[in-house]
Length: 380
Image 1 (spheres, rainbow, N blue to C red):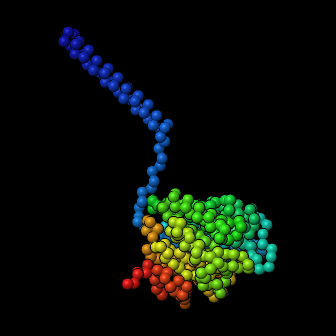
Image 2: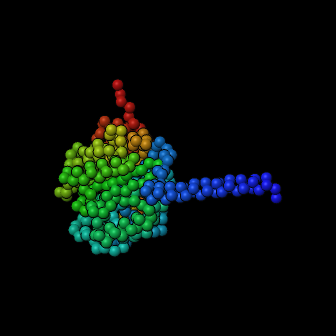
Image 3: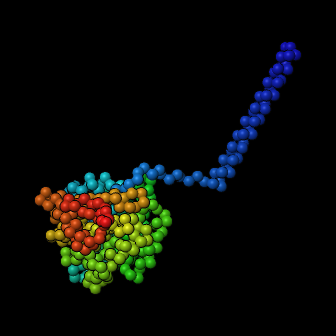
């Protein structure tokens, strides 16, 4: 081997060693840096990208799909066809909400023993029909959530949990729920008038404000459920005063709904009177004062307007502003649930239109005879 060749090999070897040292140094810095970063600054999951500027919400009133107490009254095919006529609409919305009027339970002792008192206990597996229909959230802040005491409440929560349905509204339990749709975080809460609920009566308005304020800070859209008002057809009109029923205060609903929106709520849907009431756009936000009974095939009066079962679908923008909507008219049938009526295809929408024009002349919503909802433009 010549001297020239040996010198060339030594030069290449030194270059190779330098390269190896350089690679090792870079690798050590990467490892140390990564370890330091991952220890001190854990990576958080990025928020889902916003995929739309509008959100569709479907809302309904009371749901009590059947009962096993004091005797058994359950629908045909174990409830498989209760939402036959409505599930297409319920499923297509980005968010679908209602009021669970009763329990989903097998156990518990009835807490109702007086005259004219009803207790509702639906088999827990009926939660599956709610999920199949498309429901995302159920209010539990009503006068039937405690029909079978804490055992009934816990069974109900487990049944809803097993189907992925969120809920809220009971004192000391679940105050709020959060659901994400189209990159928007939607906060939901529910208020009632019974002692075991998160109450909305005058003394408890601070609680209502606190819960909504918290959701406004944490989420993009806030939806509020309210159970209140006197019950029955003669209470279809919305008073501008505190309502009482059997000496029980059940809320000044007009003031309460406005209070919720003043605190940052974007949608308010009501139930409790077992009949439909007016709708309103207040400060650009949508209010349905009562959606009546939606799926109550037994033990609830379905006579006349008590059988009117609206499904209201609204569109809001990413800031929560009401854009437009539609009232779909269904009428309940005994033992079957809400059904579309060929004879009265728009009866429910027309009643809500009439009540809105009578009770809230400045509702800022225009309703046509087929139930289309539009923002009413200001007249010069």
